[in-house]
Image (cartoon, rainbow, N blue to C red; front, side, top):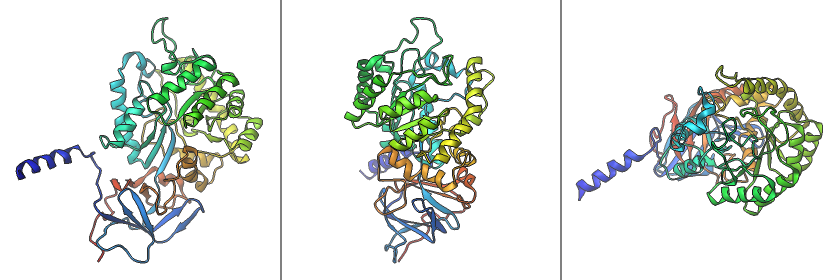
Length: 434
């Protein structure tokens, strides 16, 4: 019997994600300081008590007896970061990525997603909202992470993006009969089909809906910004999603499509690269978030990309900065999103410096990836370091309010009380408090 127990324990240990260090009992995390993101101020020192997957106390008068200690020394603690726009199972940095839909089975896409989920978590992003995939690989990955099968952030899956025939959600450029899609794969025309598409995504476990309000860059349409749905179609989509308890993120580059999507009631505009003054005014009045994905426009196209996509990328990249900076100055609510997958996964934090370069302060950019991002997702259990919140923490060397690029070099990651990344200089689980 003892031999059998030993073998079972060894087998279970072998199933634990590589690099994860599970906490047992009460854990105390210490650092020189932590960032109160709501006030934009540091709290010194920083002592967090973690029990299970939750923070139970911050800077208590006495430490709990028998607690194990993670001492991070001079580091700065922050809430786990949130990326509102990722493509974990996609990678347009691969040559010939445009043919992946007809050359790669979804099983391979899922395995790529698992690899990239680990990279994203170790980069400090403990929650992500996926921004569409093939074959519901994001839903499968979301469940695999929840079950502890693979390392990764908490995932808000969207399944297939919903868009018009021949539009940015559709797979074009192939001969008739190849990969012809319908509402089950998000390709829908008219209010009735749009509602069916939303219901099908919900049936398979998504936690948000993505709408393609305009044309896009990484597809074979002539335009990058033309509207692709009427307001009636968008409104039907948003209303059905709302009935199902799902918020809508709207991919939109062009000004007209942005206005239509905001009027229809979407929660966020993704990219928003050609937003105009009217769009800014309406988004502010409605409280609609802008998820600007700034960094991706500094990433050059691949030589192997189709000429049309290279041309559209250059055109949108040249215009994006001016429009997004104007939206920032006007005070549009901003959520942090990267479009990771258009550049290598794990480099998500480069978005912070890109946002600051366009006019946000470091603390505004950090809020966009913490407390404000949590609000956009509709959750109140993360985004700040406080009792009762999820024990999702990151730590960096340096002062992110003075140099936001230090967030590109995360040294410590805890998600749900489990340590996934620990700097060699940190003393982890060293000693007990008596």
